[in-house]
Length: 147
Image 1 (cartoon, rainbow, N blue to C red):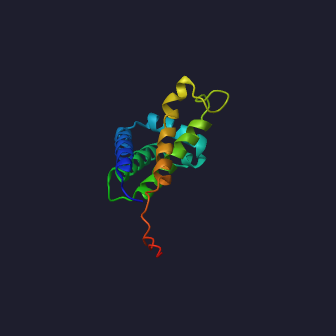
Image 2: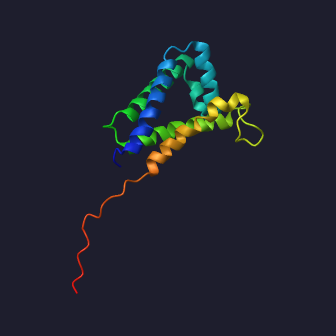
Image 3: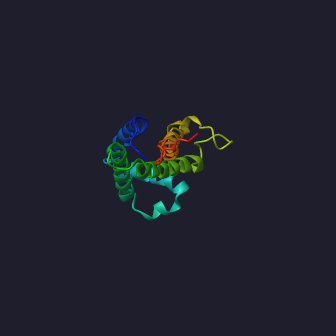
C-alpha cells in the first residue's frame, strides 16, 4: 500500500493527536494512572497485574510510538494502520465495557462517555487506511486484437 495524499492527511492528523496524547501522559501521577488502568481493566483484565505507574508510562510510550509510526512516511501504511486499528479497538472496548459511559443501549454515550466515544474515530481511521487499496495498473497491457 502506497503513501497517498489521502493517507498522509489521515496519518499526520491522527499521528500528531496520538503523540500529543502520549506526551501528556508522561507526567501522570499515580492516582490518574490508576484511574486509567481501572478503565482499561474493564476490557483487558490483565492490565491490573501491572503496577499503575508502570501502566501509565507504558500507555504514554505506546501512544508516542504509534503516533510516530503514523507520521513517519517510511513506516508502511498497512503496518501503522494495523497498530492504530488495534489501539482504537482497545479504546472502543474500554468505552463499551466501562459502566456509566454508555446509555442502556450500550452504544450511545452518556455525558461522561463522550470523551471516550470519540476514540471510535481512531479505530475507523485505522480500518479506512487498511481497506483503502491503491489502484494498480495492469502489469501487462492488453494486446491489440488483430482484425
